[in-house]
Image (tube, rainbow, N blue to C red):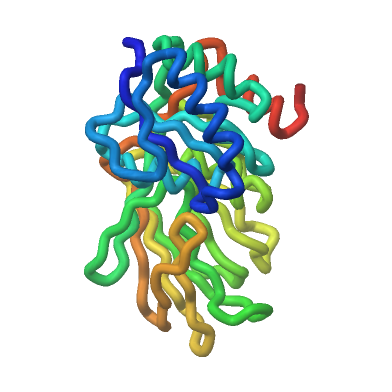
Length: 264
């Protein structure tokens, strides 16, 4: 990649808490001749650098979705699966990145359609029970074929980047980066027969609230978007845009997976 000349910096918003990390970043940028824009609009940045964890990464990836700006994370959160550098590697790692020593991984996004609104999701779309402790009955169809009604706590659709989040904790499969697919996983299904499914591009997953007295809630990347009354539905598909994740050249999905989840 060409050397970085201009970088946007995204933090979790509590500037005082990250002032030390930002000062370290400014020192690296000064040595590399890189112009920084911290938590502000940058004119045509070459890259966005995130100081934080996966939540801040998602916010940055959403902000720059479709803009052709790769996002690279320095982890100061908990897991930081989407980040490329540990906090202790800030100076050495970003010096390499600013010199152009990085590559870009393109990740599929999801597109949600509910009523007359369309929304992009980076990680996942979840339809869950709107009443804590109450099971909801959800009908689901994939590619126009009805697959039945299941009692459960919810049903989620996750992109490859989201497959290591809530989907993983519910027993869903991990989708390796590079797959153009999403996974459909039930949350606490009241049956022995509900199993996760991996669905390719061009196929809609339609989820309908079939409960007579339990409202549904639609969550997009962990944020509540809408309620779902009986008979209402949402459609989820692989979206037209791809998020751009920047990593060091030697980093692969499997090395990152092993580092975060303790398999290596």
